[in-house]
Image 1 (cartoon, one colour):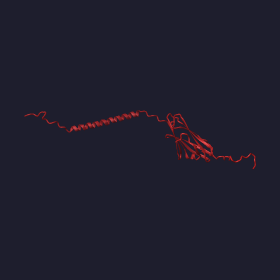
Image 2 (cartoon, one colour; image 1 turned 135 degrees about the horizontal axis):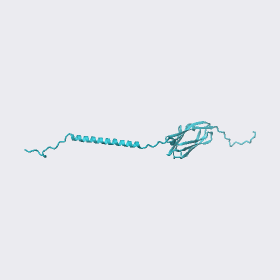
Image 3 (cartoon, helix red, strand yellow; image 1 turned 45 degrees about the vertical axis):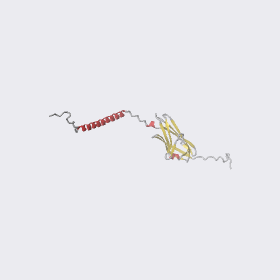
Image 4 (cartoon, one colour; image 1 turned 180 degrees about the vertical axis):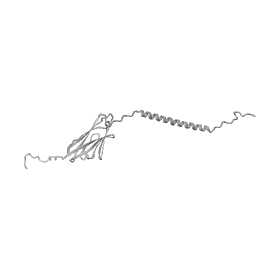
Length: 196
């Protein structure tokens, strides 16, 4: 009798444990990737929280400083000016977006000339005059509206100066008095003390 040799022995059978090993290895790899990504996200968030946030710019440095010059009283028919001076007190550029005048103020005057740099007017209440003009740090910008007084009365309203999302509002009061009728240049001048 002969004993079976290595050539006669059947090949080792693949047992049910071999596919299970690959599944286990796959699960371990997925777990390792998930853990590594969690660690990386945590490290990134930690680094981001260590970064210094820039100091917010104080409101007084985000607003244009504004000065308004307008006569307190004008005579009906008289030309006059509304002068708006603006200064950038901050250390970053600001943009003069618009100067807005309440519609009630427009009842006091007619507009003879819009300031230099004007790009668009949007009617309504308020009437918006757009400039979209940069104002460098320390720079003063002046806008002059040339106006003519209309009907007598006292007119009150607000003027808003917009730069980006910030606004400076200023009240304006203007009294228009009745005009003195002008002498007719075609009428003959009378000598003082003359009797008709």
